[in-house]
Each structure stands twice: as structure tokens, then as C-alpha cells.
Amino acid sequence: MIMKKIVFSMLFLLMGATALQAQEITSFPGMWGESFYQDKTKLSWKEIDAIMKESQAAEMHWQKSKKQALGGLVFGAANFGSAIWLLSNLDKNEPLTGPAIAVAGTGLIGSIFFHSSMKNKKKAILEYNDSLDKKTSYRLVPTSNQNGFGLALKF
Image (cartoon, rainbow, N blue to C red; front, side, top):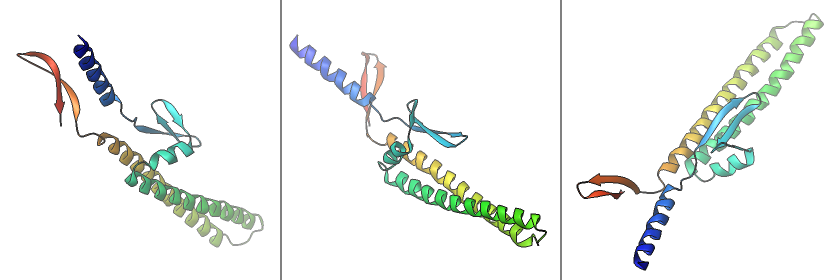
């Protein structure tokens, strides 16, 4: 009787341990940037940054994304400044060619940086989610045959 309880409890613990898996990260665009969720819980930037450090490939894409976002912010600020320059030249009836080129150029370069940043964020999240599936090399699978029902250890 005691042996049955020990076997049952070991089997129960083994099934519980295989069912424990890290949750995938999902990303949703919002008005003020992306929101990241893990198991219906919203993650802060510090939490997502710490999570991305768990996978080396995901961390590489995440760091690249942060650098590209910084470049996008720099060119966005330059775009804002060149737009003010364009408006001041418009007000003073001065030539608009230089400021218009500056506005178009900084806007285009900033957009490219932000687009690349978003692409690398997606790659980082996908790399992290892919790394979750490769944690264990086995799993328990319910099976049945002529002898009855049971669990099979599948590699």
C-alpha cells in the first residue's frame, strides 16, 4: 500500500514538473509604444529587459533594437528641429529648400531606424519564445493500446 502511494506521488510530481513551462511573451502596439504581456500580466520595460537576457540570441536582437530606437529618437528630434527651422524660414520669407530637405531627410532616416527597431524587437520576442520550446528533450504523452491507457515518455 505504501509503495502504491509513493509511485502515485512520484508520478504526480513528474507530471506536474513537465507541465510547468515558461510563458511566451506577446506584444501589442499601443498609442505610446508597445505593451508586452506574459500570461495576461503586463510587463514593465525592466522586466522585459531582464527576461530577454535569458536567451543569448534574443538579447542580441533586443540590444540592437534598443540602439536603433535611440537612433530613431535622435533623428526624430533632429526632424522636429528642422521643422521649426522650416517654419521660421516660411515666416521670414527666406528660402525653404534647405529646411525642406532637412525635414524630409531626417524624417526618412528616423523612420528607417524606428522600423528596424520594431523588426528587431519582434525577432527578439520570437527568439525568446522559440527558446522556451527547447528546454526539455522529453515529454509525457497519453497513450492507449490493447493493454489499456497510460503515459508514454516521448523523446
